[in-house]
Each structure stands twice: as C-alpha cells, then as structure tokens.
Length: 72
Image (cartoon, rainbow, N blue to C red; front, side, top):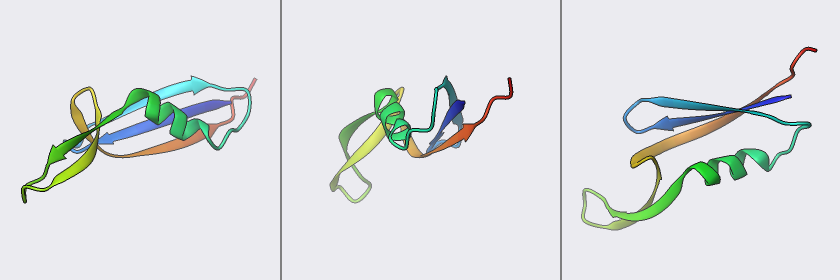
C-alpha cells in the first residue's frame, strides 16, 4: 500500500511525499505531517501574535493524505 502526503503552501506551491506502508493506519497522516513541518509564533497583519505552521521556511495552508493500493 502506498501513502501519499500532499502539503499545500500559502504561496500556491504543492509538495508531495510518498511512503510505502504495510497497512492502513489513521494516525500515519498526522505523524508524517508533524515530522516534516514545524510551528512558530508570528505577528499577523493586525499586530497580534498567532501560531503558524511552516515547511522549509514557507507557511503551510493545508495538507491532505491519500492511500493507494499497489497491484502486485
């Protein structure tokens, strides 16, 4: 089975990561996302502090996960 993690950046770019896994695990998506990204406190346009998620110094908009069965 193949697991595909897609990270969508605020700039509009998309990064995809593929992993080979033995079976479906509902926690794998969050674990993979947390291992690739980090959070830090930033100041928004109104001057207030807020937490943001980053991947390679670019802010993350969202992520999605897909599982695909590999045909042998």
